[in-house]
Length: 73
Image (cartoon, rainbow, N blue to C red):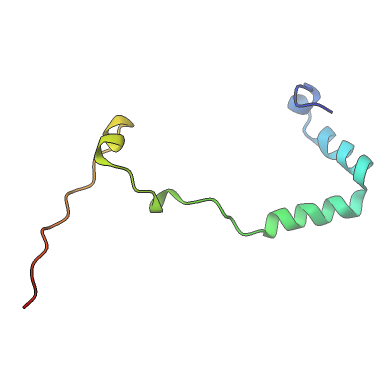
């Protein structure tokens, strides 16, 4: 099966049936369970720091300026 196979667009279950026929039912079920229980490793957008220029370019409001540092005596 290739990525250009139009059957996949019409019936995604055919991809699964091809994989089960090629590798067997047990390995496919185990692979699906591993994929479902695997922790997500993608970065979240919350930790993403963009400059004010980039935020403005993509249509977001820039973050407010940080208050000035105050010396502690």
